[in-house]
Image (cartoon, rainbow, N blue to C red):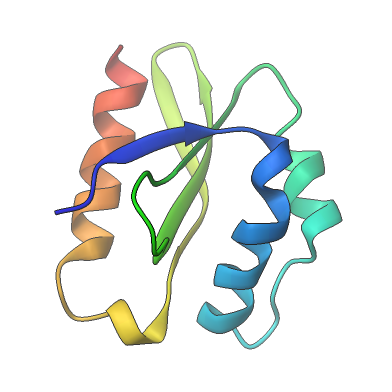
Length: 94
């Protein structure tokens, strides 16, 4: 299992590449960066290359709302989505 890394808006370009592979209507890097600039924003991505997944959430009052969870098609069906959900839950509890 890959280690999570908290990322900020400077990673938006790389995250947009993952999002483009994961969705038919991907978010552009500018939109991802905009969502990541708020004080409640939480971005998590694989720390080790290749980055195959990321999660973007808003954390407020000890709760988190997942804005997007993207996994490259080549990395799907390996439990990544569940692991990223649990990482978000851990981060919101901290």
